[in-house]
Image 1 (cartoon, rainbow, N blue to C red):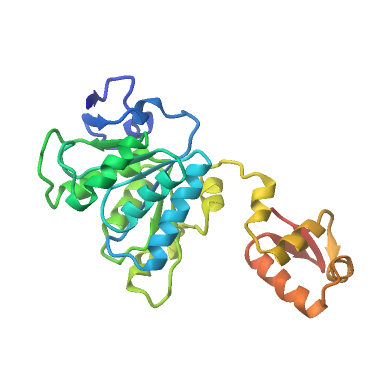
Image 2 (cartoon, rainbow, N blue to C red):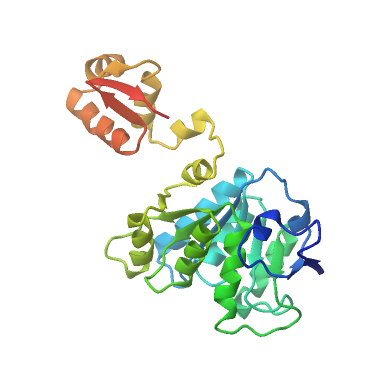
Length: 283
């Protein structure tokens, strides 16, 4: 374990830019000091009581970002946080867990094994509190400012209206960081907070590509196309030059009505644009 003060060269520059950076950070694990300076740092946070959908999205998003070199930050809480940490480990990447308790007091106790796995997987455990300091109601909102401050972007996956994750999103905005939210089921109470963020202008996040674009990282052209199903990929590959719907249908031997349905979906995804009856690929 090491202690880093604000005047140390190892103190994170992003965190130092925030309004109230902690005077001291206690850190276990080497990746905090040795990370690639060009790696995007992405926080993924959300409810402690996720749906199966939310847990899967958080895991997959973190895994796919880790596979592309991103550092995943979260709070080691039950639910979305734990899923994000596990996803990052599955992707062979680095993940940082920011505690609301002392650096030697892993809370919740249920996630102590996960904390061990993070350290074994070249991740780091971080806290502004020394030793075995107990967590309190106020330490978790304070912890959230560190999560936001360490990151280039904060992504919310499922959050009720009165959620600590929304505090993290607000703190990220105050620190001039990007904020994204994953849409959920319209009838789910766990999606009320994320949908409110989307209405207020948060970036809509569907996959790792959306996150990388949000933080200004270039996504390889083939990866942009590969995320679509086979029919959509065929259409996109056919648009190596702008074409009318009749020209696409002739090239691919698709029925016009069938093709129109898929072109409409691709337009909604932002992958295709119809300009006066001529279709252009936009990714």
